[in-house]
Length: 117
Length: 113
Image 1 (cartoon, each protein chain N blue to C red):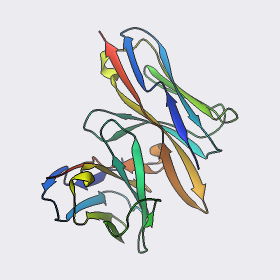
Image 2 (image 1 turned 60 degrees about the horizontal axis):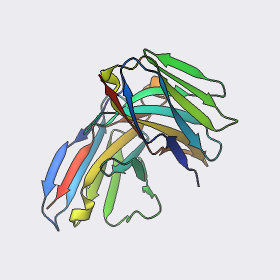
Image 3 (image 1 turned 90 degrees about the vertical axis):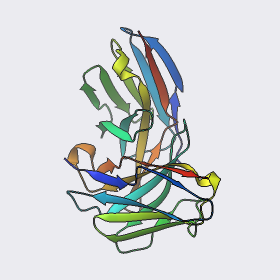
Image 4 (image 1 turned 135 degrees about the horizontal axis):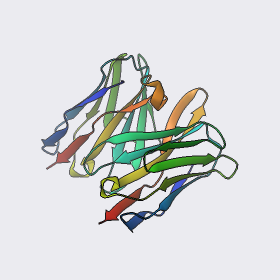
């Protein structure tokens, strides 16, 4: 079945540094990938939609300069949290479209727990 | 703006009992999904409902969709402890060919032995 690998699963960084999160579709080509953010005990909020070879589409209220998204190939999208601050601490989840027909195309990564200290 | 609400937000139930989680959404949608999330984990796909009247069942879980009422239900039959998790519904909408999911508020289910 379709598999999406997300890395790292957990990262702790210092305030002011940048962190890159990778999302790879392992056995299918993902023309579209999505990045979500989830606060503790809350729902998933869509941050941006990433299309291969074009600029990402950000949801209202999401700072594009802070959350840089690159989708350079059909199997890889990256989210870079720039100049991270403690309020950026959260659980980030990617999703790729174009995978298992059983899921009608949405396959989720395992998530990245980001802690900014 | 599409809004997706779940009811209840928290549910504590005894093993062996039946219960239903409700998912209401505010505008027409293309598809409706149900997911399970265990603490600290990502999402596990449960069901995809494609059209009005769709019903799907897997084990003790059954999902249904009423597009006219803009309502989906997730019914739990004879609950067991392993079903303790947070359940999300998500509504898919297309906007000029771009599809995306809007998630519900989530229902945290705790099954008590």
